[in-house]
Every structure is written in C-alpha cells, then in structure tokens.
Length: 357
Image 1 (cartoon, rainbow, N blue to C red):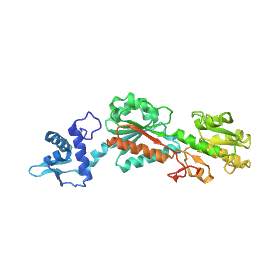
Image 2: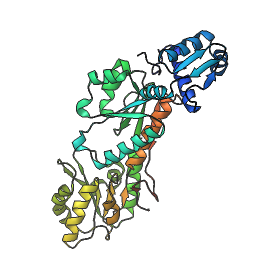
Image 3: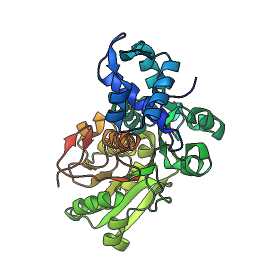
Image 4: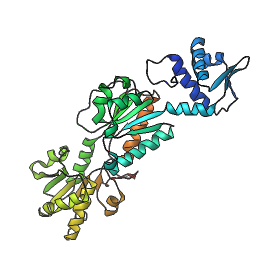
C-alpha cells in the first residue's frame, strides 16, 4: 500500500495534500456517504494546482476512503479505514536506554507522561528497549515513523548512521555539559543542572555547617556551584553499586562518624532513605537537625512523607515537555531547538516537591 502520510521533505506535494485532506475529513466529523467538497474548492482551500488536487484525490480513492461522483463532488466512503491509515501516519518511536526489567521509577513516570501527552494528540508510541534499538530495526520502523524521542545515548546512531531518518523530527534527552551538534529536525530536552546546583547552594549556605559531603554515584559529576563555594570544606563519597536503600545503609556508617556540623548533599532518593533509616536507628535525625538535602528527582511518596528537603526535576514535567516539543516539530511549528527544564522553589505539583527556601 502506498503511504498517504507525508514524513519527509522529499515526498511529492500531492502525497502531503492527501495527508491534509484525510486529516480535514476526520476533523470535520464526516460520515460514510457525506459530501466532502469539490476539486475546485480544494484548489482554493489549500492554494494548490488542479493537477496536485487530482493526484491527491486519486491516491485517496486508491485507498478506498473517498470516491469522486460526477456532478456531485468528492464523497467519503470509508471513515474507519481512513482512521486506520491515519493512525499508521502517527506512530512515534521512543528509544529507551534501559531494559524493561531495569527501568527506574523515574523513567517509568517520564515514559507515562510521554505516552499520555502523545495519546492526547492522537499519536501512537512504539517503545524500543536497549536490545531492540538496532540500525536494522530502525530502518524497518522508519517507513512509518513520524517522530522519535530518544536518550542522547542513541544520538549518533539515529542522527548520523540512519540516513532514512534524517528528516524525521527527533527529540533527545540530554544531561551532559556540552550538546552534540544540533541540526534541523533535532532538538534537546535538558535538565538545567546549573540552576539545580545554585538552589542547592542557596539552601546549604543557610545551614550552620562547617563541612559538606556530596554522596553520589561514581558515574555522575561533582556538584559545581557547591564545590566552588565550599572549596576544601566539601568532600565526596561515591558508590559503584546501583542506587538503592541498601546502598544508603552501607554508606550511613561513614557519614554518621563525621562531626555533627557536617551536612550531606545526597544524589538519589533511595540512597537517602537508606541513610535516613540507619541514622534514625542510631538516634540521629538528619532532617530535623537540618543536615541533609536531596539533589535528586523525587520518585515516590515516601520521600515526601519522610520530609526530605528536595531540589529536583519532575519526571512528569520532563516527559511532558519532550512529547510536547516533538508534537510541535511534527506539526511543523518548530524544526529544531532546545527545551531547558529548570527546577524552581515553592512548588508541589506533579510529584515534584522542592523545598521552600
């Protein structure tokens, strides 16, 4: 079956027009047998030549969704089939760097937000896990793909090694200090880590602490603004295991052995819960003594119930922003550019709770 829905700038104009006519029929709520319009009125409506209109209508007739009736005009004959064909033209690929069995709650919430936002606009999402994201599978899927949301881990594969996806709109999640080379049909959703660091520093400066210990994964970088301000009064504890409550429990003994005027900047919610649990069992409440801050992305209600001060990014906000940006690109209101997600104080929405400074 020849594709109706245009994806690339190289597709014929009549094919793009067939797409727009199909969408116009569906948005008008027409039923089988209803008169849509005439050839001449389509020329005026879309400001195209009669030949382009004739070819576009012929393509729709070939798919059995309209019929041209002499002295009447173009009539709808199969709305359900048009809806089905239309759905094939609204498939979005979501490329995940995580195996399904390893998805962190943060990524689950972010994925749910993307799926919901895309569905509201009638787009269907196909999720490819790490093992499924291969050039061969992308090539097969590329023929039906309107857009891609991906981890920046796949930037080089999608942007440079899959030429058949060059003109497909793409949005990448990005967290590094420097961006890959941006180009047309690609954009980035970036967590504003610098703003997060500044808010963390603002909070820590209010505490009566002489030292700060930054607890984080070995895979992530040291906190910039906090490190610059505290200088040799800040140290770090890193862990090579997966972030978990057990990891926090294992680290807690080192932290509790430090002087009482030491504050802790903790990167992960689960790790923070493990540290807090162990500290309470030892008669120490790090939250009440204002000795702890989470530089994190809140994941579950326990974090809020315990009362941790948190500065982080909502996975729901981040996922929604990525889907909305891709939708704008697919609808041609944007062709590229970045979307910066900045944490802010005094908010308690969408599962994102940051402390009141």
